[in-house]
Image 1 (cartoon, one colour):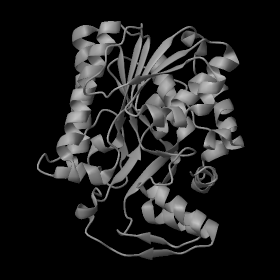
Image 2: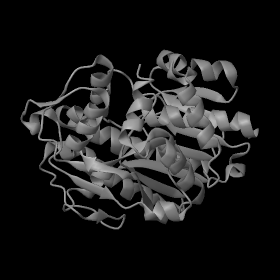
Image 3: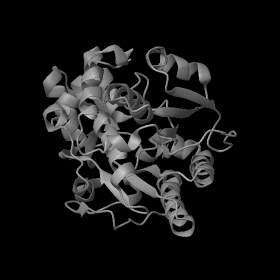
Image 4: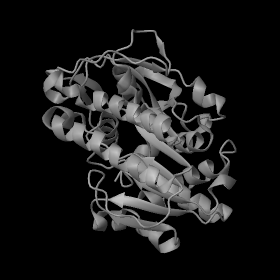
Length: 351
């Protein structure tokens, strides 16, 4: 398991040492986390348990999971070493009854596979919207002290090349394009969070994440960074199915965790915050070339119809993260400023 590696322990220690997070606010608190077996959710749970032990915070985590056996296998080490992790079996669309008190909620359950946005648009929308509504109702019932909704950079639509994207702008997205089932439903969920803040004084905050990866990525993950990782491990050439003109920044998983906790404890209710490592901004082709050059492989092309693959059209998603930085957040430059270092840490733990 990747959680037994030195890289995992380094990441947990780095999160623990993040002095911009007021850890004392988490003492004796209970978290409810959806999407807990996903990449970001599982890293967040591991980090909270690690920090709880290290700082003696007595944190309790209720993780919503669909598959109990899968969850037990994924968190086997944590279950053996801690007493703070408990599983709630169910899904966000039909939440089971939860009798325990809850102090904080992180809502990360969502469809993440681009192909599903095209092949299962109805499910993508309904899981997002109905699920978020259910989790917000739970937050209101429990009178939580903080709520973070994990959104996406895709809510910005298609910014112009060279433009730095700030949180106060949302791009035009056609409801007639099936793949927009994902970003449009994310926008509606963001608005739903703001509505609960306005109408019910629920302290919600929104994190708009760029593409995030690092240790814990599953070998079968279909996203482009995982495919590049498999190419590194198997020493085979990278084959791009598009011209790779999309440009974006990336974010390391441990830095996504600190961003979540930062806005949970210091963010302004009803606001959204971008999260990205600005120093990683590049095109997909440039990223492929960086990976290939560092690992002695080549970049080849097998161009296909992007719409049939579920890919979005060419993006120029250069996120401005100054609002998050004003809260004190920072990414760990020594560890992951270079994309090749992010890939090294991911591929060393790829399962």
